[in-house]
Amino acid sequence: MKAAATIRVYGVVQGVGFRFFAQRVASTLSLMGFARNEEDGSVTIFVEGEREDIAKFVDEVNRGPRLARVSRVDVSWKPYAGAYHDFSIERIHHYDFDFWCMKFLWSARLEDLSDPSENENGAFSFCL
Image 1 (spheres, rainbow, N blue to C red):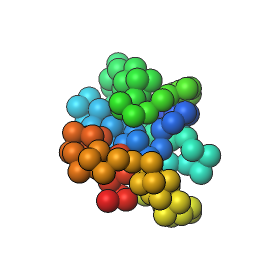
Image 2 (image 1 turned 135 degrees about the horizontal axis):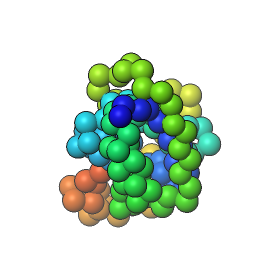
Image 3 (image 1 turned 60 degrees about the vertical axis):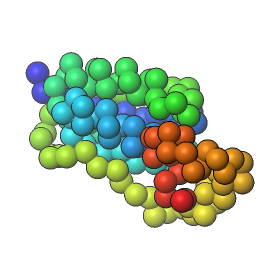
């Protein structure tokens, strides 16, 4: 049965490749929608597809990518509308990336930045 869900993920979920992780998992499960960072540090994800696949997606979101620390996941089920035809990462324009990039780069080791396996989930790829 087709369904949709709005998922809000809390914890250390920004700047760790969470949206790229969500996009990869959604693609694997043939889910459509988007992921976007919120000003409060959470990530909002909207997905449409088979209800069973959305449930699998939520399980993966609870684990998150390697660098994430998920503390809470809220799921709000919605009726399927078929409004999306892909899964996109929405960019934020309402707060300063420079702060987050500098915070990351200040604490990162150079060898981690140059090692692709350390950046496998797209974490801070917008800083590099």
